Amino acid sequence: MALEIREYRDDDLALLYQAVTKLQEYLIEIDPLHRLRMMPGYEHVQVEMILSDVARQHGAIFIAERNGAFVGMVTGFVVEQSGASRLGLVDARTGIISELFVVVHARGEGVGRALLLAMESMLEARGCDAIWLSTSAFNTNARLFYENQGYSEREVQYLKVLRPIR
Picture 1 (cartoon, rainbow, N blue to C red):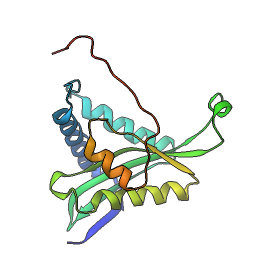
Picture 2: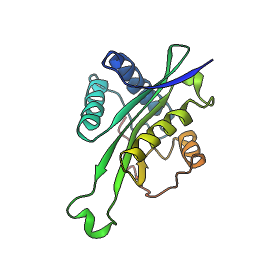
Picture 3: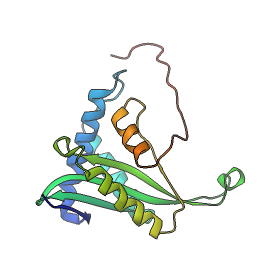
């Protein structure tokens, strides 16, 4: 069962839509406060944002396939510090991993790690000295995965629900 990590091609667009949709469905399912949703057009907006970020900011998308079948993807790009951010932060060229998705049946088989390593290598080759990524606090599997790959918690956000919106 050979795993191949390759760069995104234009004919992979349907895979990108699939990954964005499945990732949001998963997050909706595990959200304990039930504040996530997927309205019509959600996946189109997300895919357009990903493609735009990648094109504008020296980014890439990697696709994972096992025996020719799609099993995951990762997206990332480079951010240059500018203006006011330089006043409070050391000069840096930072990589952003914006999406990482592995199909359910391939989780725990090294696909996420292989995708992450491919993106880290690309970002390092493009001069990044650090990588930011984020995940939801309630996505405990992702948090544990990232910590096991050497990432550490850097920022914490809080939410207080004042009234249910259902």
